[in-house]
Amino acid sequence: MSMKHQTPLLDELEKGPFPSFVKEIKRAAEHSDYAQDLLGLLELSYKEKVTHWKHGGIVGVRGYGAGVIGRYSDVPDQFPGVAHFHTVRVNQPSGFFYTTKALREICDIWDKYGSGLTNMHGSTGDIILLGTKTENLEPIFAELSSRDWDLGGSGSAVRTPSCCLGAARCEWANIDTMSITNEITQHYQDEMHRPAFPYKFKFKVAGCAVDCIASIARADMSIIGTWRGDIQIDQNEVKNYAQSGMDIQKEIVDMCPTECISWDGSELKINNEDCNRCMHCIAKMTKALRPGSEKGATILLGSKAPIVTGALMSWVIVPFMKMEPPYDELFDLVDRIWEWWDEHGKNRERVGELIERLSFTRFLKDVGLDPQPAMVKEPRRDPFFFWSEEDVAK
Amino acid sequence: MEKDELKKIIYELVEKSMGKKKLKQSDILKKVSADHGVDKSEVKAALRELMDAGELIFTYFGGSFVEIPPKE
Image (cartoon, rainbow over all chains, first blue to last red; front, top):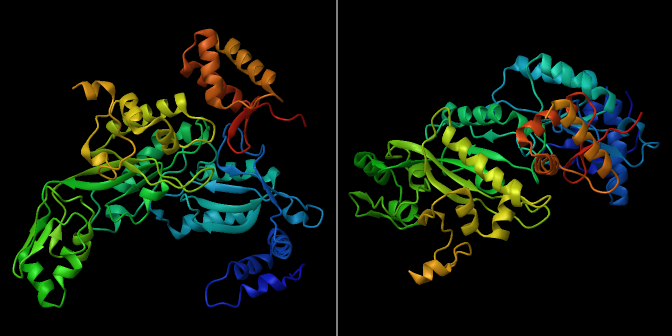
């Protein structure tokens, strides 16, 4: 199929050393009208420096209020192939593990009903199928469902939970991230498919504080694997690191954020009481150091990207929770948080913003959590703790 | 309260608010539950039946709302 539209500006984006989305859309345009007109529309946007997309509206599949993001062009007569260009979000498997058969299945369905263009994966973690018409949504959903796929979250709902690879490929995972993610997904199916909240709510599960999935910055609730007890040290392996050229003082001791490590040239000592379990030393000296033996997770709440108001990072609400099936303690906590958010949250107010508005003290009191030192972000400057009259009287 | 009656109350609430205020699912649960002394879970179940039957739909306009589908 020859190109319908001239794209001199987009062509520039193919010239650099990096993979180009333009090249991929052009490949798809060889057999897709959607992709042909997508190139034309995009070229127009680059030329006029203005978007020609409108999003939202009333598209979806029956019974669900999430999983389809309506998208329309404001110049449909010029580019009829993308007059409707809805996105379908498909719930990804935990840890992004697929068989090639599963990937072919998704691509075959998408070639049949959509543009053939995908984004593996979107920033929330879903499989993103880019561009289809309204009349194709129910058939796509029927085909996906018949093969045990389901749509993901969108709108004011639980977004598709995601996680790092966890114990599947990483020896440092303190929790079974994939099991937790799957259980959260199954437990909150209704909240994921039928938007009931003031705004979106994201779960991300990281196996350790290295936090490869950046859950602390991207999830309303970050579940991060940690441990209780002392870091296990193999002094012989520490010496091996030193003998093979590692500057332990510079690379380990001086980099410890709580200054709890010392090294006298022959023995590494850790004051575990002061350790904040950041994983820096363990990740640098993988053979010499291991996490403590009692595993669990730290639960953090409140991060978000700068949409509507500024970005926030999650902060600790439960320093240590045993994460064992059936995860009732976690679900009970989540339900209490949602009830509070539902009661007090304004439209489009994330839970972190609500805590900032009403105070962390109020959140802890209403949700039934006891204040603990690990919750303090910045000693002496933390904005969430205030003395009450009763505290002063004491 | 019978589920059909509850469904009628929910539908009428959404219908009355059309063009004035977009209702979120939680607005409906709170309002119907408070006005008629019905548990929120019952309201939620009735609302879900209306959704599954296509009598009400979710829409997205900077947030997710419950509305009556447009006439073809």
